[in-house]
Image 1 (spheres, one colour):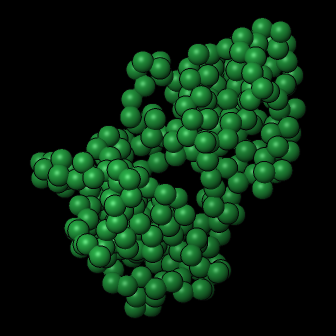
Image 2 (image 1 turned 90 degrees about the vertical axis):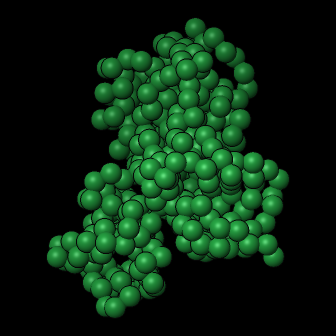
Length: 299
């Protein structure tokens, strides 16, 4: 089988051509999986200035590692490579990176005190989106001092405190990304954040309220964030063209969409189509209950 160097972790690994993508198999970015890179973009990305690669490639390696560890498929091209460093979920602070390591062990361990082997450490600093091994070691030491993590050589396990911390940040389970599309109304958005978002989290989804963008101004970053979602909730109460556009993009990516609408506006529904059958709500308390029922039925 042909081998090729992964641009993001520099390991030579087997590759397979799948359509327009080359699949890199089992590199440090995806040790137990693979990721795809557009064949035509390999040399373009390889030719980026050193300063750009030095800043960006460790983040991309961490992004691939986390997504594939969560069972998600990663297919990249030049546009995605340029957009990843600005994605809102990329950790920036040391505290955010600490949480990534806790989450990795939490996902892969059976429970507190169950050991996970991370060997050798020099191949795994992308677990925390770190640029080098030194930062990973610093993060490990901080977690040990906080009594969240136990290290025995290259074996790592969470303390009871560490397990509970990781579980709390994941709602007790791995949360799936949910994109919430709302009209540009501050009162509506504030009410949803308080009344609706906690209920969505209880059903195993991590809701993200994305800023609306005019369709003609929508960039790669916005589309990347939409395409990462496992679910969209689109409220069409105010018939926002941007909400329709983003939800339509999601449908085109085979992302399930739940439509919602305030019942008092139903007579003004501008698009009447079988796929658009919104949950009709009078108040957010009722809507929260309906969404919980719908999401629990999906489980």
